[in-house]
Length: 184
Image (cartoon, rainbow, N blue to C red; front, side, top):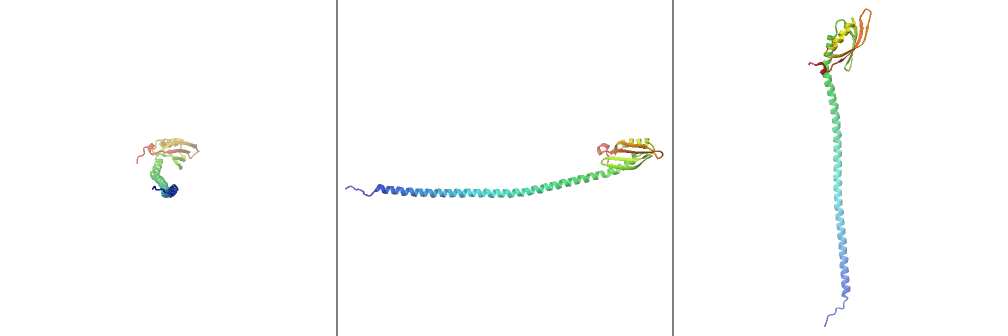
């Protein structure tokens, strides 16, 4: 006799397929949620690492900025010290210049010329005095012109007096070391 299954096998098959579909769908949802969670954790970890690197870079930049400020301050102090050293060196070099100047003024001053005042402004000199005659003033100017220390004599005023001689005022300038053939 033939076997006839009276059970609704199609309905049973449909229910089994539906149950497998729901289980597969649930597993897919759980798997998708797990993948999304892992991706979020991974991206969050990457962001945290980058934030940590950025913080490290910011702190290092701040440290370097402080060091740069210190370097700039040190460079400024160095420039100030170099300027001071140059001034001191200039003063040290000009020390013998004053002695040479007075020595040369005495050598260029002819007999019969008397200085009452001598002033210096920078490299310019002003001489004021009395001479027995105007020819003695011109001799003084010639001597200044041939001097190793003095140069560029220029007569400003000469007044001839009655008995005491001629009062005069003249200017000159100091030669630089290269001009005068400075022999030290």
